Amino acid sequence: MRPHSKNKIRLFVETPLTSAAEVDLSADAAHYLCNVMRLNEGDTLSCFNAADGEYDARIIRAGKKNCRVRILSQIKAPAVSPDIWLLFAPLKKDKTDFVIEKATELGVRAIIPVITRNTITERVKTERFIAQAKEASEQCERTDVPVVRPPVALGTLLDSWPAERILFFLDESLGGADCVSTFDQLKGQPAAVLVGPEGGFTPGEKAELDNLPFVRGISLGPRILRAETAACAALAVWQAVAGDWKKGE
Image (cartoon, rainbow, N blue to C red; front, side, top):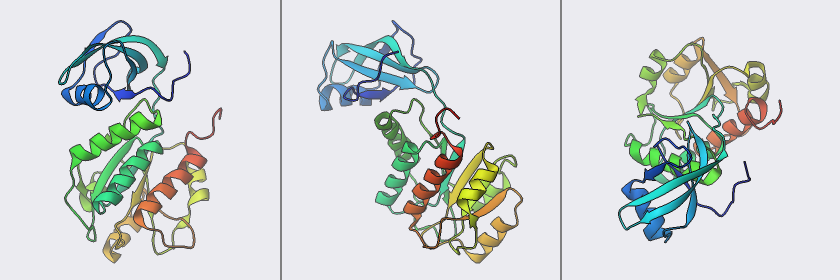
């Protein structure tokens, strides 16, 4: 396989990808390629998905509302991101957009909006989140896209939580364990990070979390971080300690 060209457009495609196959792209993808990026017949791009990896492709039919590509050779094998989920209370629009984008770049496998007592907004546009995750994956060279789940109330989430998956919640009281040593002790297990709302967890929510056997409270240091900062910081530490940043290990 040859190195990927950083200037080439990458496009997430749900259709199975195999060499020599011809794929009709969605109307949105056709509009983006042909009207926004002004690609024409004969131009090349990359198409990818989690199951098949990434392939070179050539446009063989270009129109304002339709576009067909021929799949060429594979340039990147499928790669599954680390088994870490991000759970977060939705924030104001721009901040939520930031969290979705950066969580995708940081390699999360799933993103779950969680409604808590102090959540600022309960209006969650799941389709918008999915589109943002796809776009971020296209930009950051992932071959998979995080699963974006519909919003769920905190209590409902905890009641149905898979016991084998550790849930790390960011304890804004600064009473949680050191995140670096905690991640190191528990690395290798399925995990999730829960970031509370800007107003923090209520005493009742915190007590419920503290009493669950699969939950670990963690601290990100001596300063109170904004929710969007805390999400990125926790995921970065997890990746550095237990994720896929250590190549060859």
